[in-house]
Image 1 (cartoon, helix red, strand yellow):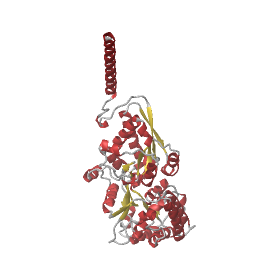
Image 2: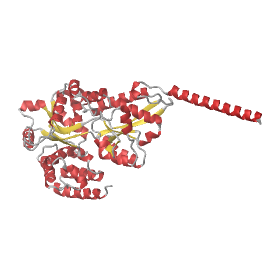
Image 3: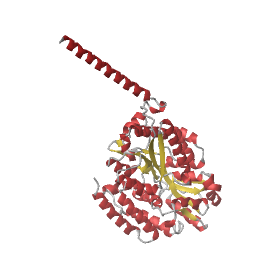
Image 4: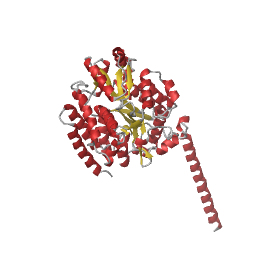
Amino acid sequence: MRNRSTLWLLLFFMAVVFLAAGCEKRADDINSTAGDNGASNHGQTQLNDEPFEVTIRHTQIGESKKFRLAILKDVVQQTEADIPGLKIRLDAVDSEVNRKEKLRGEMAAGKPPDIFDVFGSPDSGIYAREGLMLDLTPILEELGLKDKIRGLEPYTHDGKIYGLPSGASIEGFFYNKAYFEEKGLHVPKTLAELEQLAEAIQADGKIPFAQSSKEAWVPLMTTNNLWSYFAGSEITFGFRSGRAKWTDPDVVRAFEKHQEWVEKGYYKPGELAVEYTEMRNQIISGEAIMMMDGSWANSVFRDPVQAGDLIGKIGYFNMPPETEDSPYIVMNDFNNGYGFSSFMADDPRKLQAVKQFIQNFWTEEMQLRGLKEDGVLPALIIDNEQLLDTVDDPLLQDIFNGVEQIDISYPAYDALVQTPVNEALSLGIQQMISGAVEPKAMLEALQRSQDAANTELP
């Protein structure tokens, strides 16, 4: 019996030794693969370096977005260098096609790209509720970025952050400064003065406003600003809740004003067939003098390849209010950005790639580069003096002044209304421009679409 007890004791001791040795080896293996991968990784565990791929869906297509694409490619290259085995595949898709067709279909199928261009509101909220977008809240806290990025509101749903703005923008008028100086014209302080400018330019044989309406959101920049002036900046928030209606008299007046400008010939005939990228050519060629567009368009007018002789001759001003004493109400939002598939959380290596991409993109260096090269206003919180020191371009200075001039800002209409309403509005504005429907009748039909959409709210 004593010999048997001794044998069992020996076997138990050997098992303990082998178990301890196994644990020690596993710990050594983990430690050998854990590198800080550079100080930027915040102690993330580096996993194996077997090849793996991450797809980024972007919308940086065409000459006007070449600087934005160059920045993205540099971020991609740095991220690949930071993570052994990582290969990032760029998938370029037109912005409107991505938002309204391709991404929507992929989300419906439950198969979004790994990283993708996404509109903050309402799109990110819709996809987040379906469990298809990665919750970035703990990642931003880990990287120390949660309180350093502006404009997170459109991507925040139920207290969690589901995307990041790539930058900020405002909407207003670009104009030919050289022409203004030659003709003795001045930046308008009221809508009436803006219309007087349009009359003078038209009488000189020029087109007052460059425009392209093949994509409905382009002319709606003008209408959105008009109804925000006439009916108040808060009214668009009320359509979804039912507190306001598209048939409110001041909203109707805004669409009638836009129709009036069309009928007076302030825009080039045939605008419904003109592509967005062609609109800037009306300014560059000297055919048109002013153009309502987003601040992002400034990169076109600062690029010698695209702007030619107009380099340094283009300025910017906000759409003026009705009276000089009225507040400046201007679209200013952060709705363009990137989202991340929730399925990335299931793969530790892809999750590491997400963190590194975020850390490389949302840096002062890249955000200031985006401002300097592409004219995109930073989403990262950066000292104003540092911003001013970064750029001395007169056009960007005009845009900075435009931001400072804003008394009340509002997000673009398509960040607030439901998709069916946006689609009905897009069709309606194009029909109004063509003369097929009057504003009041169009808005009555639009309100019916709004009522139907409101009944389907969760």
